Image (cartoon, rainbow, N blue to C red; front, side, top):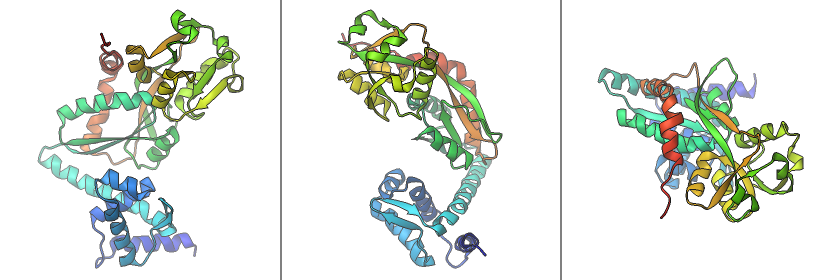
Length: 335
């Protein structure tokens, strides 16, 4: 028999053993530590000390005489038995959440955690507005937005680690349901003392002589920009990329400081434009925008609150693209 068989058998015994049943709180610590791959980050997420996280993990390891994690400096990775235990731990905690949801349903209450994985710049700005509206109706719901790359959103949705994901990519998989959430516009921004700033217009070919700050290649922003420039015969190797940054806010700050020009979401550019720290430049014939989607796994065991949020987000589509969007990109200027 394979090692995987023995690990699965051993992991099953850890979960169901009557005399040494692990508590749900300890199981949650294990799950969060496995997801974060770092005890310090797990502690911050759980609002507890790092030593408390370590003690919870060590108590599980000592009781069952197994090693759940392998330590590598500040980071940790699951051991083979830890990997086998992880999906079962998720199932146990998910069942506990569903039980709590059933109790709330009987008492006509709606609450619980609402976790969303988000990979878009605009999503980080817009989701809090949407979630705050939802929370006004259901104050017992506790939203949590976790920022990650698009592949991270896809993997966690596919493996049913998160109930919802927000991404600029439409996930084509029979088990993943996507709906359009809002339209994100992408602007070219330049420093206020740049020659293009006063005129506010340029040709796509003019980019070839300019210093450009870019997002990482796999980002939705970079993909949208390069698709648009491709129609003008411009490829990535033709651009003078002076800096590559993974954080869109850092890119906007670099433009403010005159490092170069950059393409960013309208949300990211909004405050700098409103306060006159950067300028927007229109590239003739180039209209860059992308549809941001919300996705879910059709077989995920949703709570009542999660189902209500999906329907709520769908109903808010028009408002997200008009009133809410405008309120987040229009700032009062300093007199």
